[in-house]
Length: 137
Image (cartoon, rainbow, N blue to C red; front, side, top):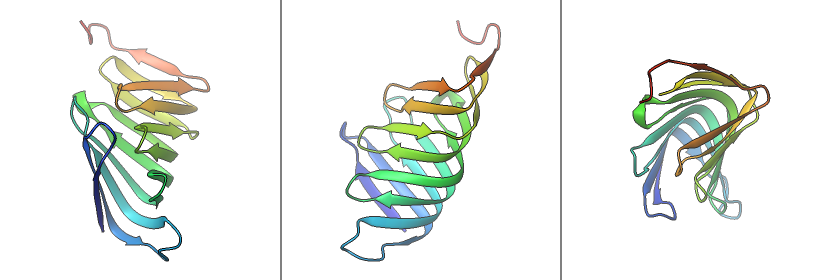
C-alpha cells in the first residue's frame, strides 16, 4: 500500500506499508502494518519507520503504536514509541521515552515534540544531553 501527497508547503510525502486496510469509506481510518513514511523538507527528507499505525485520512495524522525510528537530514536519529505525526502541521509528538543523536551530540528524555519544517525538537520530562565538543562550529 502507498499514499502519496503534498503537505501545505508543497513538499511531497510518501507513506508505504506492507499492508493497509481501509475497512469502510464511511470511516477515514487506514490500519497500517510495516510502515515507512518519507517527508520532504527543504533541508532533505525525514524517514520514519514503525511496525504499525493508523492513518486518519481526514485529519492527515498518523498514530503510531509501538517503537518508532526516525532518520533525518544531517544524519539525525531518534528512537521512541507511541508517536503522533501531524502531516498538515508537520509536527511529531511522543509521550514515550526517547533517545537520539544530532550534530551536537546524543540525548535522552521522557518524551518529545518536534517541528519537522523548522527542524526543532523539544525534549520533555527529564531531558539529558551529551554534547560532543567541536561538533558544531
